[in-house]
Image (cartoon, rainbow, N blue to C red):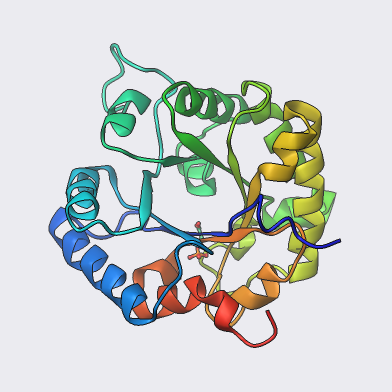
Length: 265
Ligand code: PGA
């Protein structure tokens, strides 16, 4: 079955993590936008989004608006609450006011270093949606999960719980990121990623309806680089990538975004 290209525009998303301050972000986004332009990048075919740290967002917003860059952007996390006595938290209302289109929720680094549960990830996804943001819901198994329960059990469970909080028909993005593949240089095989992505699409269908499942972009993440992106993008259920390390190297990120130019895609 051919991919429903028209319904699912590929998304190449760069997760900067804890890198680049607001001054560095300005130089970086300018260079990225120019490099894409030099490469005659067609934004009508592929969306390119960046996820800078919170303190960069205002600078990135102003630059993208002033120079009419076609890049989209989002934040790396959001509070489950919209306002109140929650020291250190960032509201979805604030992100929305900064023109963020997306927010990442449930990244494995939040789950492991900040003990975020599947329920909390669901509350964050729903906070994003009620504030007009598209949550990029991250799921994935650890090396231990892979050994004891296989590749799909944990991501399916994580997504199913998170979507319990999400109204049916909502626009979401799902990122399948095996924890053992993140930052390790060891990406999952395209076959494994495709199998899990297919099962995740079934979870979306049962929670949010089949139209929503067909329209939802499912990304693969974990050691994506220009040399392996094409093999993932060939898969039926994979509609893009969440890129960490390689999103900080402009030439490499541009090559990833231009996956359609790679031989055989
Ligand atoms: P990586 O990170 O591309 O450096 O493996 C991916 C991610 O954490 O989103």
